[in-house]
Length: 364
Ligand code: F6R
Image (tube, rainbow, N blue to C red; front, side, top):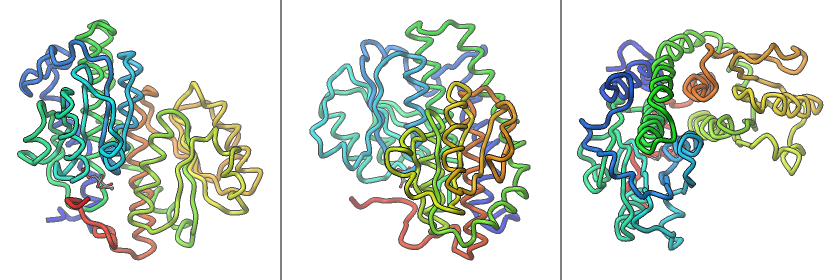
């Protein structure tokens, strides 16, 4: 059942090249995105002047990445809302709002309630769901399924990256439809998305390195993830994954916020995972790393082909297989999943079934 892996989580981490392939390939025609087989006509995007992404937990974190991509390509305001907050806030929506709900199980009570509210307010609803025929899939106007296959481990891995793939496809498709990118650009983006598959395969070969690095985190009590832009969105996901299965307290910080508070928590030996995959902010990130380093932080840096940083600022530098910066979330996510996984294993916890948590949260 676990296919020779000691845990479902590790099996699911390793299934990601296949789940991404299954999610994107059926939606590419003549080199550009095509949602015909999903029954999602381009016309649903007519008149949309605002997009709201709503979900819980890891699915919400996928939304944080998706937001950046969609806004970049579409130049339409996108907000990401925690479903359990959104539904009680009398949110502003109308027929020109597209509400994207994201859910692996398709049964999360708060996400389902947010979807129902969106429908009441006449928004168009599009869901990114993994489980066929689930409540959220059934009740949404349109569904773009992630074809990640069954996810058994409580901690979501392959569903998350498949959600990212769907959100990227939505960004490309809508941008093409509305003419904010050209067909050539759309084809180029699709090529880059496909190139993520071999890059993930290569990232999976870092397992032994990650296993070793995680040995140094066994006695950690607090850990910080820092990043900017897409890397901040990724930091949120890295942090929830680590907390969830290793029971180490961690926080994700937008790196520019460090000096507005958190820097006081950085003392000798505190681990800081610094994501530096976005060239446009890499110089700023390096200076943030110097700040934590000066307070004695143990720095695990994750980079995507930036010029070699001075090796006194980190303990480990994990160099991702090169992708263009916009696609680094896929490979970086794999590293963060392995970080959580191996740390949990070394601490002797129940990786697949962490205490107090359930796979599907059908209560509010
Ligand atoms: C974390 C995790 C949860 C879920 C959340 C939403 O690893 O799995 O945070 O992402 O409970 O679940 P779905 O996606 O089923 O709506």
